[in-house]
Image (cartoon, rainbow, N blue to C red; front, side, top):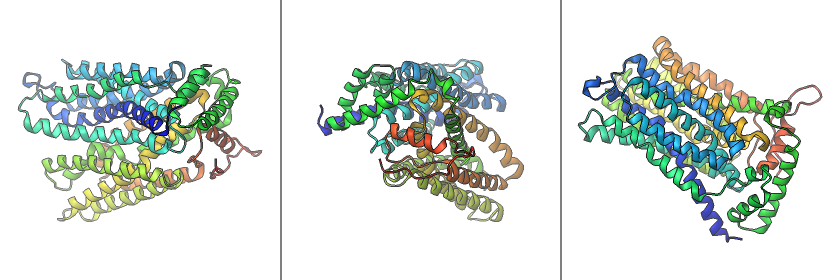
Amino acid sequence: MRQRSEADRLITKIVVVVTMGALAFGYDTGVIAGALPFMQLPVAKGGLGLTPLTEGLVTSALVLGAAFGSLICGMMADRFGRRDSLMALSVVFVIGAIGTAQAPSVAVMVAMRAVLGFAVGGASALVPMFISEMAPSGRRGRLVSQNEMMIVTGQLVAYTLNAGLAHFSESPSIWRTMLMIAAVPAILLGVGLFFVPRSPRWLASQGRTDEAKHVLELIRSTDRQVRHEMRAIYTAVDDDAEQIGWRQAFGEVWIRRLLMLGVGLGFTAQFTGVNAFMYFTPIILRQTGLGTEAALIATIGDGLVAVGATFAGIWMIGRFPRRVTLLGGLCGVVLAHLGLGATLLFLKGTAVESYAALGFILLALLFIQMMVSPLYWLLMSELFPMRARGVLTGLSVSSQWIFNATVTFLFPVFLHAIGPGTFFVFATINVLSLCFVARFLPETKGLSLEKLETHLKDHLSPDDSGNVSPATLPSSP
């Protein structure tokens, strides 16, 4: 049995290694903003000669690949394990990074961006799942939230490197270097995983209980913790053994409702407008009269706020209930959208319009990255039963990527068509999301994954009238 400090150090090492996948996720989603202006140059001048149509294809290929990757990798995780699936994804990450950096044509670029998207989507499903199954229940919230921290850190690194490389390099092909850097965290992920044990819960689900117990002895500091957790895992495995597979699990009403809850949370997370701000802040600010260079610098502000807010969010997750945090964040998002819409509508042409607009954008990102996005990824790692955790997580995260693509596609259209009204639409949608969360999301803080499964089954199973019980707080674990 390891001492407490040794077990904690191993958990820390596991989180650092696994979140290299989240760092790659963040970098790959952020780097394209700086690479696109160079890729628009003619082929003879070092670019790819992108048109508005092919630019959209290059951008959207990653998102569509991610939707597919999160679904497929969720299934892979149930069959081959979380760690081994992440190892395979690290190879896909490297192939995608090299392929995009060396792409000789638009067609190859689109194909390689889709490959990269597959890896991004797979990582978005597997990283929080793996961490949640390794973490002690008392630290699960904070440790899983490191996933979101590394995503926004990856985006900030991408924005900063884009600006630095563009400023100091005179080569029009510098975009290839920007894209190649994405291979670095992928290589670190693949190498590091050789020194990380497999998930004890997955091992137990495969009948490898001796290996599961050995892993728990490495990552828990007392024999009592190991015995308690193994008993809970044994019980969950015995219960799940009654199911032949995940298709049969869908025959249970509570699991279908749980999947609907997961999909609804993906809608909630994306329709905060987080990626509208991360991708289109320069466009919004240019409409207020701000110069192009100043608008581009503002994207670094987006990244800095996202990282700082995620730090604060990790602190909050350790101290406040999940429901309260998420509901508070959505209230803040509604107010920020109303403020931004009012600024663009009533302060148009004034000296303070640009500054007020930027302030409300940063306020929205503060609430989103502090109280919504970290909670989304944490809940995706907690909600689903062991019998089909991979596929249910994959389906839910895949739907989140589809909502991501929907917002990314529709936002410029709405902004052009109705201008400031776009943000009033976002505010209305977030009020509806707030009602959805208040009605259907139960509290999950403080419960082991096995106790949480029982709590969710009780909460989502229909009563005699066929209704779902209102969201309630769980009893103390």
